[in-house]
Length: 87
Image (cartoon, rainbow, N blue to C red; front, side):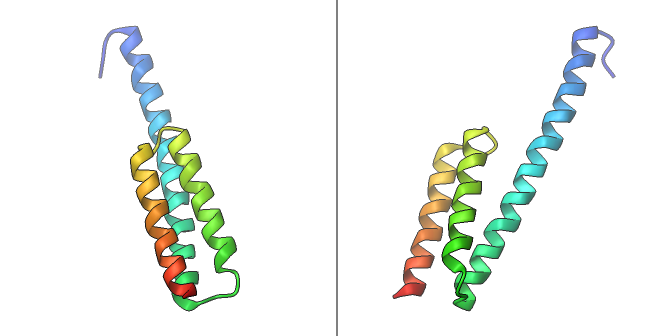
């Protein structure tokens, strides 16, 4: 445990930020999993699920939780799977 006041503050901030990032990542995984399941099942609402997943990925990238290239890769792969399922 740090003795310096600023470092004590940083510990609290880091814990808070970690919880925030974990919540965003957890929600992201859930939305992506739902979209993948909808694509695999050929569900009628798969387009809406893909749009929601892409939106969640973009938000995570804009908040700095995901790197922008990681987000682009995830979106690209999801779009490829969705287009393959449509064909």
